[in-house]
Length: 411
Image (cartoon, rainbow, N blue to C red; front, top):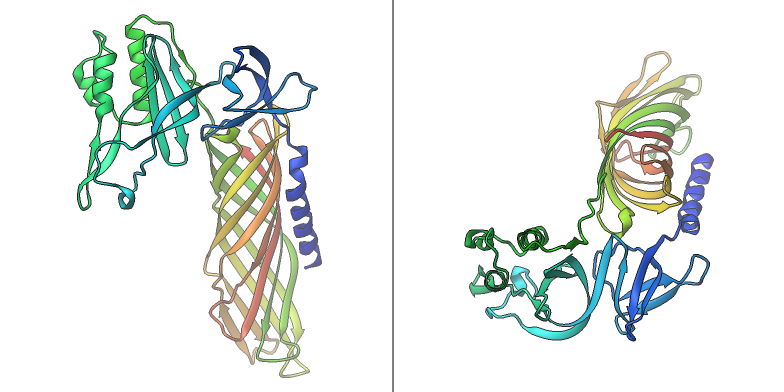
């Protein structure tokens, strides 16, 4: 148990210190200040999920970071990746949850100064604003100001929802082209990919040179990894109805386990966050001989045969060191499905026998690791104590595991 506590302490220390080793990634970009001066610089690429109000930049690799905001910058961008422009626009912040819908068909606009993300830039431009569950689209042509694409969900009666799809009429009126028929406009959805593809088609039809800033396809958002576990596990049981010689401590054993991990990497914040699930087989067998707490001259022989499928469901955070290397920390809730496991206790003269059915409770785990080239990984993981005999009132039990895990990602 002392070794397990030391492992846990090491994991906690590493989890809090890893950020000191993570690399802050600044990429080549620019911003335009209020004097219309374009300043080339390095911009911290946070891969913003929500439209930012500020951004961090450095004038050179060795200079100190500075912060610009929507008041001081008219535009900023990271070359070949993203572009944001400042604009004073009307925005409708109506919520779309059923409980929050109103009977008013028309959007309720307020005027705000925002950084709009440029999705398509050409003869007609498409802009995007997102904040949490709120998403709004804006557009303009080479001869018009930026306007919202009008859309709103509203109630016509209790629990009956309609949509104000005025944005379709806007696009049909303002973005006419021979290859775009009315059916194509009518089939549009107020969704990012649907509207983005429409603007790309319009610019192609208009023979316009255009740029799609949201065109970078993120790959490897799903990883499948084979995982080999070198486990150091320990177990004990104790009959709480008796005060002495009622504990069977099976000690620590090194065992092997194997699993397959499915991981989904969230497509924002530079792919630093993911969720994972890892069905894993593990097995623990041991025998111990102790004094019989009823008959002093006899011995008790206790056997444990515990095997299960553990299913950790967790969240992971990556800390990038360089292009090929990254550290990670994760935490998970571990569901345990035991496979007809049991604990047997018998007297050495066979005059006493007791078979205890293993029924486990779920537990948690914490890990830190290193990944190389998104293929090879190594992780140290510690699991908190798991109860083995949850069905028995007078039996206390514990099973703990520390693991060294080797992984190979094949997809």
